Image (tube, rainbow, N blue to C red; front, side, top):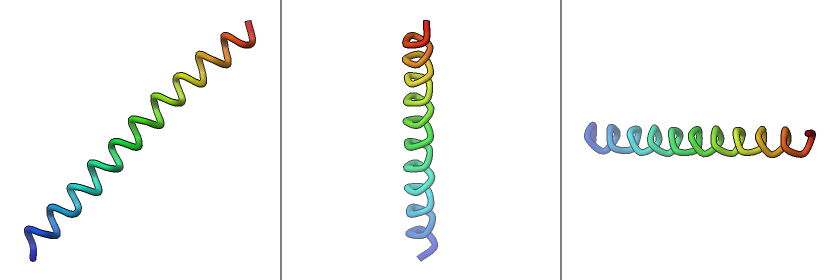
Length: 39
């Protein structure tokens, strides 16, 4: 029971980390794209 709970929470943490990294990449891409459009 405890092992399954630990596995699930680590899976959730990995997914959160993945989405956070993806969001950071998209944000930096949008930032460089917007600055390219403005100049």
